[in-house]
Length: 571
Ligand code: GLY
Image 1 (tube, rainbow, N blue to C red):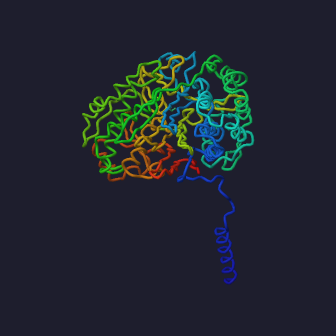
Image 2: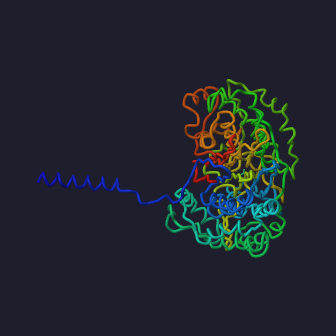
Image 3: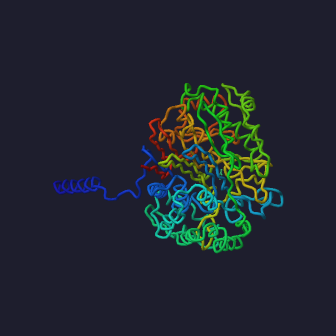
């Protein structure tokens, strides 16, 4: 009997060992590279399909602008949480000859919008109205933005070639990743509440890794854009579908709003930091001004000697961020509607005076406000991609529908998600928005105005040559993530992938807390900083930086953020 029992146990052990050690047959869904070095060209984006489409277009002889258009449309299909044709964005580009241009294809408030549209009869903000559903959407700018880029810079001069890979992916479907399945499952209730007909994102059984996402309606919309150009989106059938959707769900975007949408070439902003020329986006993004202010405020201090995320470094950066976000709340908005005091905000004497009360030993207190404390509840979804082509042209694009899946409303029959960018306006002074950001008159809602953004697509030059292409999603944390990534390379000597992966922290004036990723600050430094009066708030990931560094030997070093499915590739 004992002998039989021993045999049985041996068999069980053998069976489990054999199962455990059986060779794995399942191949990964996608090859995802987080770091790469290439000779000539590179694309880094939030999804492997989008990166690969960009690289293919470059290999077909397209330039960075062609690749960027291909990537923007691909992300609209394979990264619906933030990629879009129903949103907007900003492009910062540098041609091989060193010409800098910046394009603003940010959404606009519809003509029927007004400053109190999210307030009840007692002047209180109606919770969620600017975030979920039809009324949250601004007039989309992405499609016009892509045509503006195409007309000015395309080398392939064949729009069909740029958009067709995305049409194929929408029509035939693509396999979703585990992270995408998790995101879609987390939004099922919101999709059901915010839609007049159930979109393809709603499923009876939970989504799982490897499920095929087919988007026929989106494919048809992309075909109309392919065949009719901009009119395929802003007029005709797509415009009819958008307006019908608005009428069904209480939204206000009209045919006139769509027809009148116009992306704008803006004057780039730049600042010189310790010999690096940092170029970024002007209003209606706050990114360029805020990045300028942050860099100028920390420049006099020896943060390289203090070290990465040391007590002194974290304290200094926090104090600079506190002051910059206070300025942002009061002074920044769409410069076409509100005179932003840009020169004053960037003035070196002003920035020195802002740091006059910086105490190296003590935290300054941010004034208390009557509105509640911001605690991030969901991820901030925007997306960024960086491209350098074989000729040396560089593109930094950040594009968004605002929070994850935007308004969660899909245009019936057209298959794309509408943004909830109206929440980036200040619905009421002193009341924080989704990101806990405060605003004032400068960012009040007006018809046709663009809502203030934090998007900070940036390009860095050194000795008049291209040095870095960088940007990130992350709502209010975008500016500080770009800032810290630039410092990680220029001050702390990190490689691009190290700089992108390094843990981050963030302070935005109100709430008066240093938000930290796990392990961003060592326990000893944290205790020391708390002793100086700082409060910490642990949170999930901050930003998803996708960036490219140009090495002294001309090679390209890419970093795709390990916080997502982001992928770098090139040749
Ligand atoms: N919607 C996020 C931003 O533009 O800052």
